[in-house]
Length: 263
Ligand code: MN
Image 1: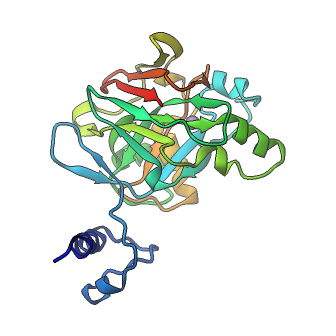
Image 2: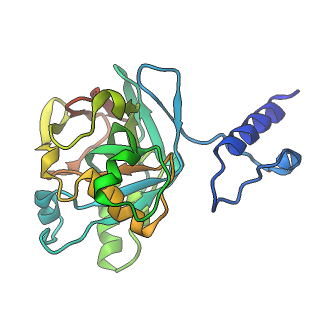
């Protein structure tokens, strides 16, 4: 069996196991030879195990800390939560103890960090009440919602979708996943980001306008949520630029720190 065929069979088996309603995926054995350019999917390893969490969708919450909302030119008291997505294959993993090379993306001249808590879902649901929402959260990770700020702003100014500012290769930097059974749920604790050893962002999770439970509940009004969905929960104030050579260090109490070098 050649390499192409082997990976195709592996992928088809994974699709069968993970298939969900609403996705057009071949799930029956006789279809496997008809899949062209089959993809292997995106996985986040689970800390301390050999398990991997398969990512279905990446959702992000916008302007979820009051001070960040103000620095982006909004009034945080009037805004309900809003969401956007990144493509699933935008994930770039940062293993514990490693410093990964993160490629500076094309076109931008103002490339920004946004340190964020990420919630990973393990249960299917829609119209989820806030009181039950944390039952749907399987685990947590620390992430960077990397942003081509100049493109995001330019598109926004022209009332065009800000897709190119937010959704691009490697824009969803993330640690490995920590099961909530071990960490508990995150409602407080410090979150910070340093660049070249200097603190740039520093806040606490209790300053989120919409808690993780409220994010899950609200998002589930718009989309049916599935195991494998992850939610970047928004960044605190003092977002700013990085250039090639900069080293970003991210932290949230209870998760391991991430280190990322822009190259
Ligand atoms: Mn963000």
